[in-house]
Amino acid sequence: MHRRLGNRHGEAAACMVVGHALHNLGRHAEAIASHQRSLKLYRDLGDLQHQADALIELGDAQQAAGNPQAAREAWQHALAILEGLHHPDVTPFRARLARVS
Image (tube, rainbow, N blue to C red):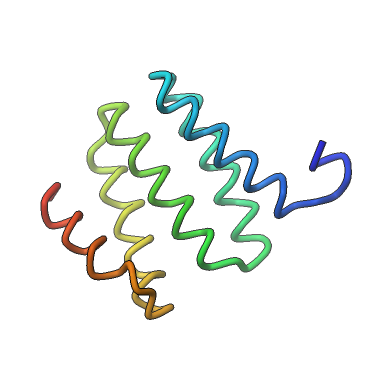
């Protein structure tokens, strides 16, 4: 629906929600594809905060799918964005990365 209406922010958000649901259902390959679509849309829109969110979700799905290197790469990109934004979640996210590395 968002795509038909030309609402790219809405489409990106919907892709992230669908990806999260697919991840929780154990359908990791589909979750990864959905998060990648969300990330592309947010990049096209220049929305850094939501790019970081999509990268975190993508990393989570990659980790669950057994791709730890791809997960770390996504999370590292998310961390770089959060640091650049001086986001308040950067410290807890950095700690989370340290635990999984």
